[in-house]
Image 1: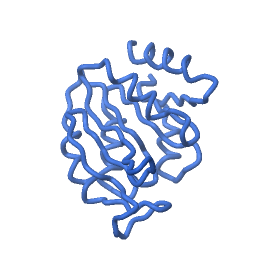
Image 2: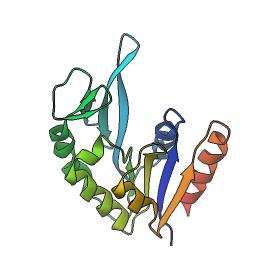
Image 3: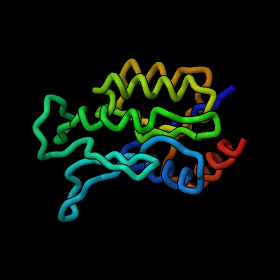
Image 4: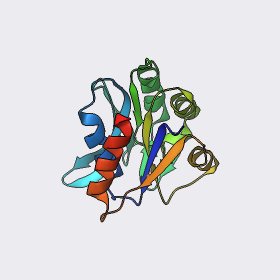
Length: 169
């Protein structure tokens, strides 16, 4: 049975927005979303926000760390500190992750969290970029219990309806 849902698409296609819309009305949810950090209208980084409203900076153009994606330096320690807060859930929770991406995959703890979510009996909804891929992401996409949904500008509204129906089942 497919109970893990991966939302994929090009950058800026609306993956995160769709995930946030779908989970916004849910009460029993555990996970985190990634928000842009903007300064003077320019994106300078990304923050993680848990289902409890806790926030931490994931990446920032002004950081200096050993992990870099494009102009952003990734703070793996911040990510690893938030993972225990989204690791505990019960069988009634919908699980969500935004996103399984290049920045997050620097963390082994994050990879373990992804597997814990996907291996659980719970429904899990996650986003993944269409243009970035690695061995871990490829394995996740090929799982028998995964439904891969691609979002485009043309199908955005239909995709939200479809996703809401899938979660309801």
